Image (cartoon, rainbow, N blue to C red; front, side, top):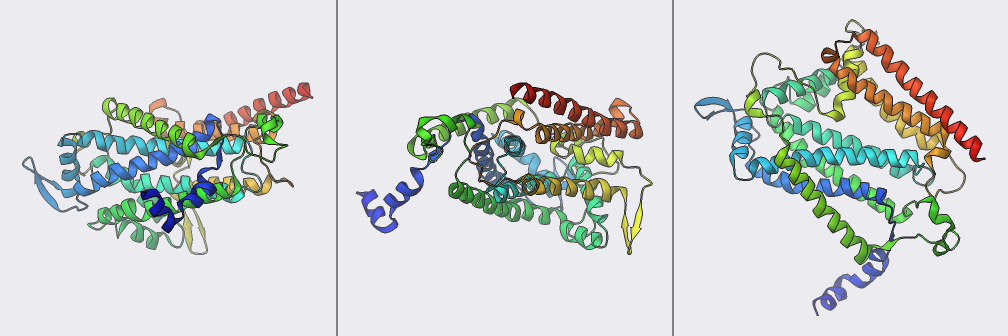
Length: 412
């Protein structure tokens, strides 16, 4: 009765026949995108709870007899609430999982060449999702307003200020003046809970819309199956109800894992670091910012260059040019690795020596730059580490390319 009433007004049956009957591939790697989506949903739900209790202000308030910034005090009070600390940890680990799943999803698309025609646009959208997710994490870094978070954010402030010609205006726009200022926390709170999530929602919707239009790529083994009718039909299960049930089960399992992590794996204890104070604590960013942080340590401190009134500093090279070049190289891949016919089936990475070995070498390079963030721990000189950062990826690329070439010659 209710369904009929709604169907007469919203044409639900047409929607069901057109969209919910679509086929979803059964290969487990296709769940990586859902992992990122479900992590985002969890971030939104936990973020609503945290946002209702958080005070985005640096005004001084009394906390246990001491005067501390209101933002810091509100996070301490959240941790003292029943389930408050657990929910904050769930929020933190969901962000970690979302970034990791998007990165892994991009790696799967790269190594299986699923970025090729006609999916170049969705590859670019995926890169945008990854970059925006990093932005969401970065804007949330400052909000606890502890000595740790302020020190970490100050690195980004000086990096943004180092952008030639526009650095001063850009840093004032992002940080609401000189850092730290009274307007910085409200500015970051707005970016973190309003602007960046709105961009993420838009990119996710665009990604899914293009995906529905173009359909998934399939495992290459499906090419020879009778159900494919010569490659004209996608093999899998219907979205409703089979895939919906699988997705819900997967989401509940994800919640269980994240809740387990939140229970037993602590965050940076803001009570230990305390509110902002003179002095710089020993800190390193989370793993997804480590390559940039490590590369900053490799750039010689006296390296600078003036061009048309703009100055390029080590912060510009390590914090602006380096990540920009990485994203640019990833963005042009589909336009360099072109094919004439549309790609409907993923390719075996073992059959693509050039692109697979480049991907392996690039991954090793990023790993080496991440290790560079621990130069003080390993007691390695920056010059020596720079040599390792160049040579080790080249060796990895050479070994991978040679082995894959031998494998393909034997296969032929």
